[in-house]
Length: 72
Image (cartoon, rainbow, N blue to C red; front, side, top):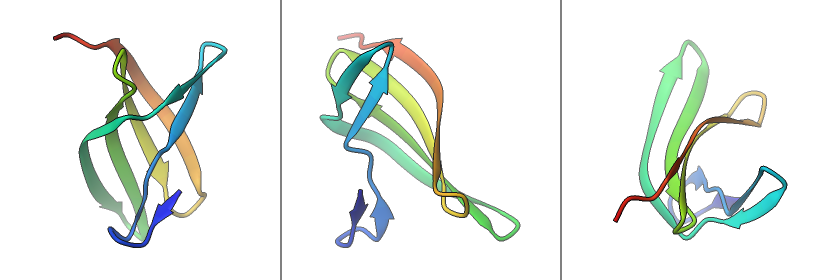
């Protein structure tokens, strides 16, 4: 979902391993330019699992890189 307050697309939930995971926190964010394309990288959590995602602003597609359990 696009957040006009921050001017970026913000993930709200992810479907992984047959389950819906509602994002409770964005732990980190950075944008990188590759020529004319901007790739937005996120580290997000649902409280139990951490997800490393990216969003391609040209193709409007998401990519999941990694899933890890939350360590307290």
